Image 1 (spheres, one colour):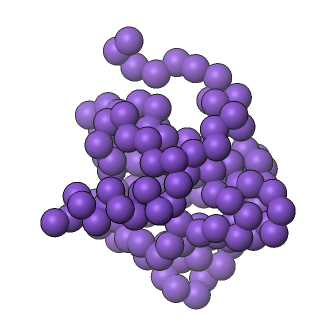
Image 2 (image 1 turned 30 degrees about the horizontal axis):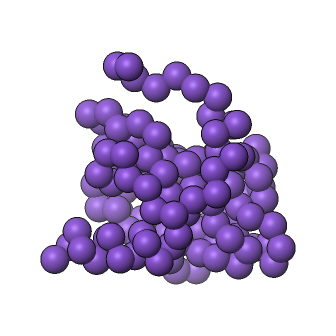
Length: 129
């Protein structure tokens, strides 16, 4: 298929992997994510990538620049402009956080699957060496 057409809400809700790339185009990449209770992505910055998030289940704290905090829940969208330090934290102690994100331009190798945050950290460490 040339692009992506699919039930994104259903795919997001059924995903239990930390990160799974669904589509990679020339200028955008669609990724579903699942954060375990209390889990966080970790503070990061994408110098040349804008990032759009949509929460489909749960509640998240988005931290911008280290101290600007925004709470987002099911149905909310968040955009992190390129160059903004950010972290996403699942604020629940019992429920998974399920979201999808669009990177523009793509940020991960096509068809990437990281079943856990540890898998993601290992792969990213290998990419940068």
